[in-house]
Figure 1 (cartoon, rainbow, N blue to C red):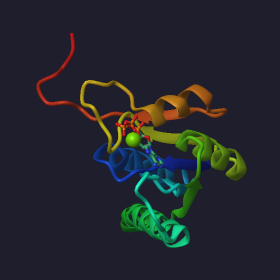
Figure 2: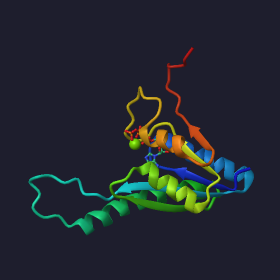
Figure 3: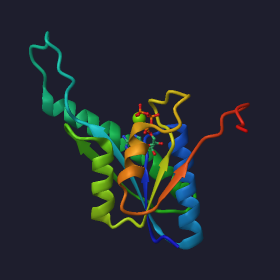
Figure 4: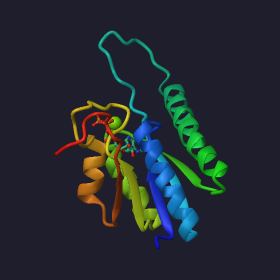
Length: 154
Ligand code: ATP
Ligand code: MG
């Protein structure tokens, strides 16, 4: 059984399913769950920008991220699991790098990730964050998909 389960969570329906799987594993095996959400704190610069409060922007992004992981933690708590949470600040690197760094630092034994996220183009099998996590993870991955009605493949 995996005793340290990290969930990459982005508030999409697929990530919610991934979280439910992690909760189920933790309930069955007694493992700890950590819910992480990466946020990009880099302000999207525009040429007509005159003045921007970058620190306020950063705080706002982090607060949004905290709301995301808090929703995940509430879901876990409702199922009797006290999950820990983290908002990962990303500036100029990939979300997947931040998630994998966090997984290493926390000594995750399993990473749970959804096939797609909020940016989903429905025809894509895998989103870019999921793909890079799978490609570079030092530990096993539990990849959770989402069935598409009427699209059962043969
Ligand atoms: P793309 O982002 O490439 O346009 P997408 O949004 O459909 O496509 P991903 O972002 O790869 O797909 O999402 C797949 C999974 O990766 C999600 O279900 C979630 O588990 C994880 N994930 C995505 N974004 C984040 C994030 N910001 N923080 C933590 N985990 C994330
Ligand atoms: Mg995405």
